[in-house]
Length: 177
Image (cartoon, rainbow, N blue to C red; front, side, top):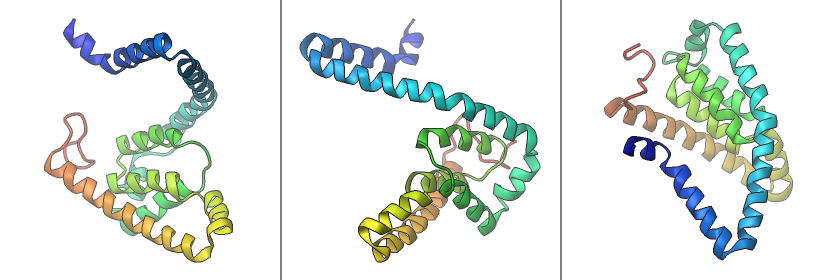
């Protein structure tokens, strides 16, 4: 019983918060339920094609190719591919997480997935064009370069930390598979 409660603790707490809001702050509860419903509808539309695309990618792109292009020995080429994969697509960041998970399971390097996710979040080409228009090329260029440096450093730090204290469910590719 306690194990089940721990498993669903976040859902239970959020439900209790929402019930309390509905009782004491009904206007806020109504607005938050509308926002939650809108996000739910968006995810229902977006996520099935993402999962289909992930399945096709796993079927069409052999695991050894992913390990070669994005794995531990991919070097700068793997970083560049991860960067390109992250900057080209448009769409919400939550679409990228299942893709990164799938690539990790296929042998992609952690630092490359950090670069992929960070590029998706902060370096999309349409976003950069708008940023140049409003903030100027100098500011955008500096932010772009600093973001790339930060993503590479954070990726390397994550790999270092995962090697020192690996997650029980996750082992770095090539270290126990």
